Image (tube, rainbow, N blue to C red; front, top):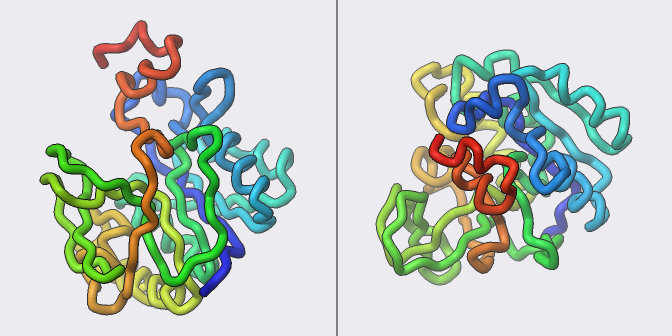
Length: 237
């Protein structure tokens, strides 16, 4: 059993799929129902007792500076290569803080009433069971162990971008992130590829079951418009 001690929020990307809204504003700072997405996440993390929160920034980094002033628990870490690689280098920027850690994309929203747990048997990803076709990442699990990751399909555990890592796996991630940093061929990968497809033999991962709707991910303006009519003017984007 291990307990979560710190959080990492990834917020460096451009959010091109949400243009034109992200032409001037980073995706995590977009307001949904009157509040920036990232502020909602920070407050949820504070509510479960976390006092060590790292936010990796890149695109229009100066717009995030107020967060460190408003929330003393927040430390901003810049990824200067955010526009040259996928988010694998964003996690590399905070590789020394991954032990007993929760890692989240900062452009999502948690349902009111959904409680983030603090203690786990082993490292795991938030997932929901789906029998319907999806283009999302799907995990196959046997005896509380992830045995396969596919991209799209059905009858599997659909992955959400919230995961929990114990001390040993956090150290492994740091090591593999250093390898990736020194291997530009890996720069186009998501950081999740490390444990799920590049080095699956090195990690004993489980899933943490959630219900559909507990975690809202916004991959398009259409997704935003479903819960905030402010975005409906660009509903077809």
